[in-house]
Image (tube, rainbow, N blue to C red):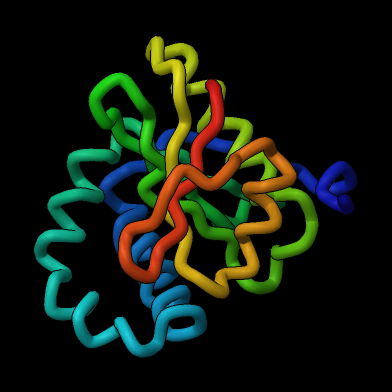
Length: 151
């Protein structure tokens, strides 16, 4: 992990971060779920509504002053659901995804959630990160593997 030599911080997201979150999400769709991109694009209004409703539970990761990642979650009953996590391509494999996952767990615990959940697309290499942080399969939803762990 080389992030220790860089200036790394997380901050609460602002409405002005939404265009960047959109770009990261679109990049993800194009690189990991290209067959689903058209359907995702058709639902952009619904995504924007979700992102706005989760803004207070969204963190932006900055490295040396540059926004290079985000983490967004929402309550789902008594669980906490990871809505999205992104690390910009030039900053991957440096421990930032794990840092954001840890922040998700900390925020969820602080909000009295006992279980962390997420869905990951089949073939997404991030599944290894989730498993390394204790997430285990809990089911499936179409093309998505559902994972969970205690908070």
